[in-house]
Length: 81
Image 1 (cartoon, rainbow, N blue to C red):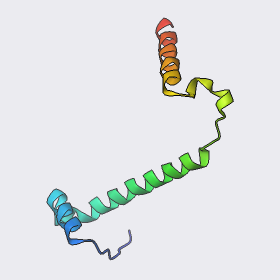
Image 2 (cartoon, one colour; image 1 turned 180 degrees about the horizontal axis):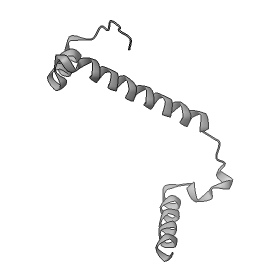
Image 3 (cartoon, one colour; image 1 turned 30 degrees about the vertical axis):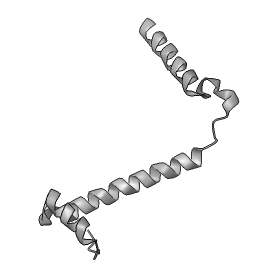
């Protein structure tokens, strides 16, 4: 476990304290940082994968109407099983 010094805007600190209290700050900030890091990692994975699916291979994903029909067809198939 490491210690650090963090400077926060007074309004942010008051809002955190209102929700978790002074004794809950560290845990709250750690959880918030973990959530942010996970979100940033997911965004990077999405960016890295962008364009990897070719439109010609997935014509059922070309627009929202096609996607909706594809989902309905999948559900009908599952229901018939």
